[in-house]
Length: 514
Image (cartoon, rainbow, N blue to C red; front, top):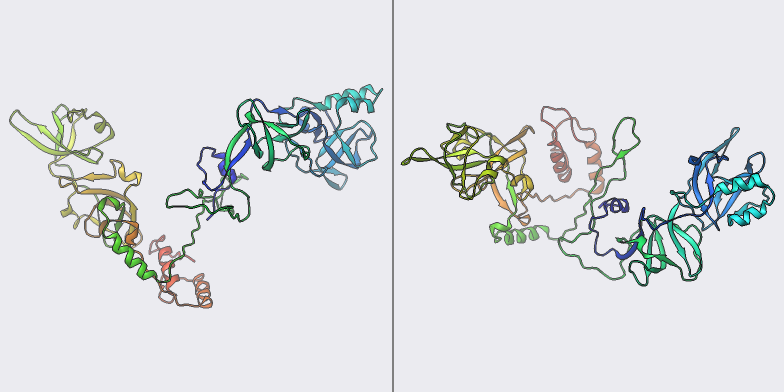
């Protein structure tokens, strides 16, 4: 199964997570007011500090970088940084950019101002005062250097890692960590481990370090990413337990617009079902158990082939005036038609059916009375009659298994109850023998329509496949070029698969699933 990745949970922070994931993980909160900006030297996308929008990041004091000694300005003040020394990082994390010089292109991270000619590849960002001493007497360069040292650039912001005496490193927003100690507001906690989604700007020492607890949020995440994880201890899972959310196919499917680089990927559920050796006996036993279930536990509706849909209700044959005194007789008012009693005179009352609406159902008072705002058509008999099915029906040719508890079947537009308490539901998506969509009303427990449970195995067809792998492969290859609807020449498994796929086309269409 394609499970949702960590980006899904980051985006949907309130979505529940599997209980067997690690529960004691903390993440650096984004935009928390107590995060600090990095103090250090700017790295820019060009050897020019005239505009602030050229800043890529601020390299924390103590960061070591690798220089390209062949890439510098004419005065050897600005040098290109090819990489950060091993173990060092930046906030935000720097990405490689292309520098073009003549016909040559070189990958660099950016440019830093040093103010003097360099002979060593490695350069460490020192405190501003230390750099100033190296440029003693060169006031113009010192002025530029001061501008390049930043303490308040908002895009370089993170959580300070420190010991009792000083700041050692910083963690970017979103970094996942493990901690210990007093996990309460306004307290420091010990940083045990940096797990993922962020790197310390400067390698952490082996000594104890601490971070500010208020800038953290507790989350639940898997132990490792992109690999099979064996849990330290087995974790029991029962029916209904959350094991994850459906993820997305990694293959891009649809471009949202012709000129857009944004790609929409389909949700993808892949299920592998393993069965016992004697599946027919298992099905027979579970069907026997299902037959003993009470009606309330049968939450599915099995609609067999040849079941009949009543295309439309009868035409109204009377009407009700807007000022008529009306009493609602129907106990269930969340239905398409209501049975009402009309007072014609002090000695004469009659019963009719009227079409319900959200407005009508809301205005029925505690005594069951209602006054109509306008004249309304009515029926002297219930609008849906089983006797009408023979002359006003569509025949379903593809069996359906529907969830009765589906929200749509709970709306008054899709359910109706007649005077005999028979429940009718409106079916919007069915197919006739020509694969043409049909719709209409079905009465529960009418011919070919019954409530079932999942253990009834409704319309389940058991296929015994005896073909070899080679035979099956050749069958599949043959199907890729078929030009007619005949399936008799194919092996049982492929025949049934193609039968299902063929249902997406009208019979008069020449398209064939391949």
